[in-house]
Amino acid sequence: MITDNHPTPAEESYARLLEENWGSIPEAARALLREAWLTAYDQFMVHNTCNSVEEVNEAIERMNVAAADFADRDREFLAAVVRAMQAAADSLDPDDSETVVKYGAFRGHLHQYYALGSNMIAYALLDDEERGPGPFCWIEGMSS
Image (cartoon, rainbow, N blue to C red; front, side, top):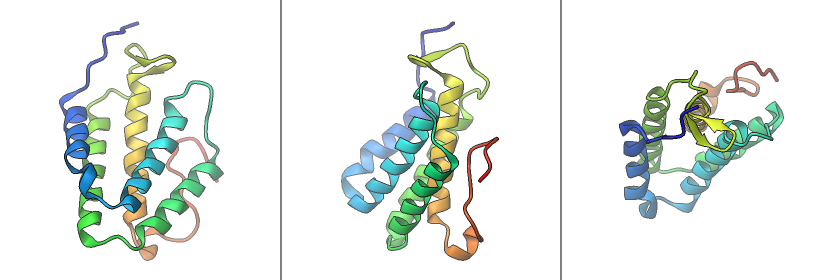
């Protein structure tokens, strides 16, 4: 087990993007980000909890409603967040169950956290036609 976890350059870039822009984005966009972060965190970073498909889809629906009224500038920023989160996910080995990030969570879990969060935000930014019919579940191995 490895306990010396350091952020990757992609993770640092993602954190910097948020730090530099947090004060200039509207509360609705911040709420959307918090919804994605909390859902992904509960799913992959807390060792004794797991969201159901319905809970994830409810969070996605709340995000879809919030995103409906975003200005182009906010959508562009959130798209940049999606790209930065996905880059952070891609910078981590999804199979790393050796490097401890926090109690009960490894870098592989952190990869999944970034991936789910970025996918939820990207999905919220789609219009209804792009989303298609029915709920969509971003969690591998789960079906609705």
